Image 1 (cartoon, rainbow, N blue to C red):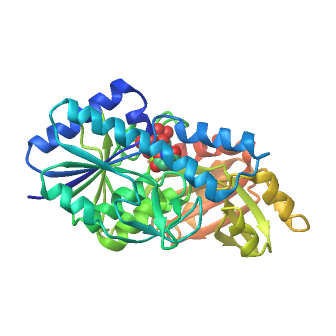
Image 2 (image 1 turned 180 degrees about the horizontal axis):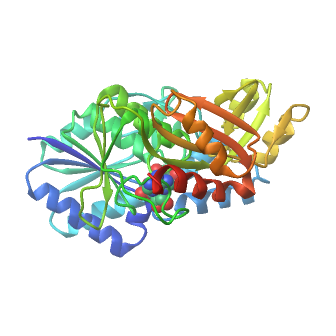
Length: 374
Ligand code: ADP
Ligand code: ASP
Ligand code: MG
């Protein structure tokens, strides 16, 4: 019997009524005969609310081990409630934390990486015909400390489990019915992509498209796993993220990352101490993602003496072959209408640093040029 992994994001389990609908969807998959392993995120904005509490009790710089203890509680609430909802429907189910699921990570609190998965208890429960529900976004280090995988990390849990369980299907179910050419919340004329390669999706995610977590896509690429991104509540084809089939220039989409710091020459240890990691280097400056930094003032204090810009955002156009000729760059520079602070050309992406308050307009202009006009 094949295994299917389904991940439900925060908006899909935001309230009791939605948890009931997810339970129905899970029960229907089980009834078709598959072994079902479900990964859940925390309900709605729970993670943000827990983070706000942590900020309040810690003068804006929460202790990162304790923060992980707090944040992992969000996913435990959803897993237990979904378990109860399934039992109430007569479906045998059991929920496990990341640690109980055998998800072993390094020790980098708030931004840990999965090292291996030993899903012994999951296998046992699936063999008994139970639906297994796993709390996303979390694991345990070799030192037996509880860790979280960085924001959006439930996607990574799902892909890692799909690999470890040799699943036939890895569905990432969300409030959006697939991957679009830009964030539909920012741009009005977006189109759903029927499929794209792991490399293209990874580039979009790294460029800030939070519809899928970049580490999750990297994992899927390395393990050859096809991800099916789709809507939880509306049936439809969604988007398939799969092994690339060589193509000529094709634009996947436009992405925005506003949560960045641009730093010149900062030591890695200082960044890492605060949950930050330089995502890439432009000339001698590092673009540092602030997504998993929960004590910005403390980080900025430690970076005193270095050149730091905290008012820039990164806008990117992603596509296979986009960096191979000068023409896309010229088109982008003309479309932007402002002079970017910096420009990066990579094989799958051209990107610009622009003032943060102009960034959303830049995304719309690039989308109009590269997607709507072609
Ligand atoms: P979940 O809680 O299900 O994990 P997320 O909020 O993490 O969902 O991701 C879904 C959101 O990602 C969408 O609501 C959308 O606003 C945003 N998003 C950003 N870029 C894109 C894109 N290119 N395509 C689709 N959605 C995108
Ligand atoms: N709940 C976590 C977050 O909000 C993990 C996830 O949703 O994937 O980032
Ligand atoms: Mg997400």
